[in-house]
Length: 124
Image (tube, rainbow, N blue to C red):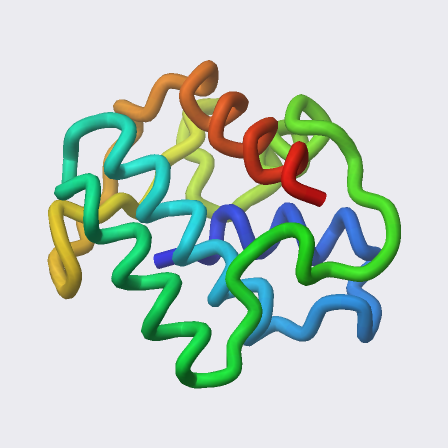
């Protein structure tokens, strides 16, 4: 969970020390839960619970935690297209039905992902 977002963020930061892999996974988990909640896969409370837990562990949870510039949502989605979970040109995501209930699905509208990323980027 979180790796599809993470790998795009790692590519966007040039695989540098601006974003360590574990930090990217933590941010990716937060984004995956936000996307899952917006799609109705999990409760609206789960994203904030996940963020609170990650924050309590000292992890990064927001795009604003990444120093320097980041590309826009469309470019991040393009970078996600390089993920190994792309099958026959279809991007597959790990989403959550709840905490501890992850599942793989290609049924994630990119307009929702774009909105989640745009909202996260606007908080920078």
